[in-house]
Amino acid sequence: MNSNFSRIITLLRKERGYSQKKVASDLGISQALLSHYEKGIRECGLDFMVKIADYYNVSCDYLLGRTPHRSGATISVEDIPEPDAAGRENVLKNGGSLLPVLNKKLIANSLNVIYGILQKCGNKQLTNELSAYLNISIYKAFRLLYTVNPKNPQGMFSVPVKLSSGRATAAQEIALSNAACLASGENLEGADGLKKDKVPSLSPEKLDAEFPLFSSSLFNLIQNSEARMGVKKRDK
Image 1 (spheres, rainbow, N blue to C red):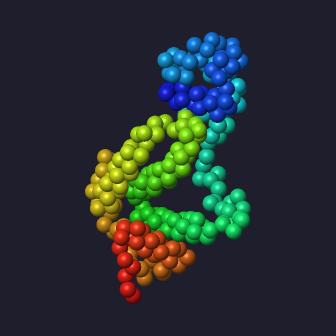
Image 2 (image 1 turned 180 degrees about the vertical axis):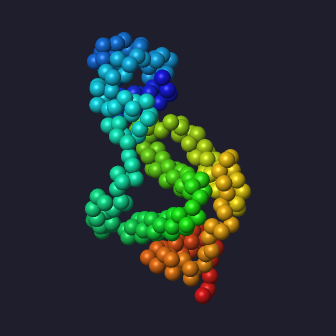
Image 3 (image 1 turned 135 degrees about the horizontal axis):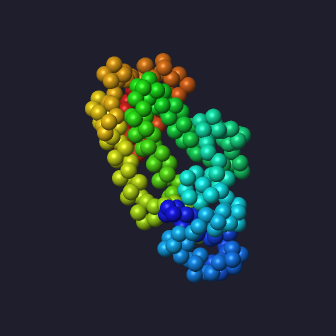
């Protein structure tokens, strides 16, 4: 049995506020055996896996960590909703600040530029490495918010909280260095580097022409980021 099983059944029990004694009784096993399952000391049989999946109303694939969806559903590109598909997410309630809306738009629009450039580069591994870097940025931000409340169950994460920041940063740096290697035209672990005829030719004018809806957001994001680095805005 993989390590996800013990972590996930522990998470599900704690989410519901159940004691080991209650769950063990409901499932017809001893508390000691359930404790062994949750600690990964012993492996359960298929019958018990099906029973505990039914008990928590989740799929066996979810218990094994094969899918993040509790129903066991897999997701395709067509299934992924657009960022604002649920409605007018940006409508402010109770006089909220405009700042979160502004930053969300700057980031989303800038990502459109980045992925537009990557699409023209046509290098799958370069796209994967930069995507990994960006994904981990979101992971770090979400984990910070999630961990602020110590009562939130940490079982949904495989990496312990004390290791998460350092390991996430290390994984980001690896992804970024891999991307830099590929972007320079060097091959990496069987993946071809970016071809010379695919190297992007960029300038503010070209970005304006190619991404008229999104370039201004990217320019503002650059300015805001460099301000956080202590760089003053350039005079025009």
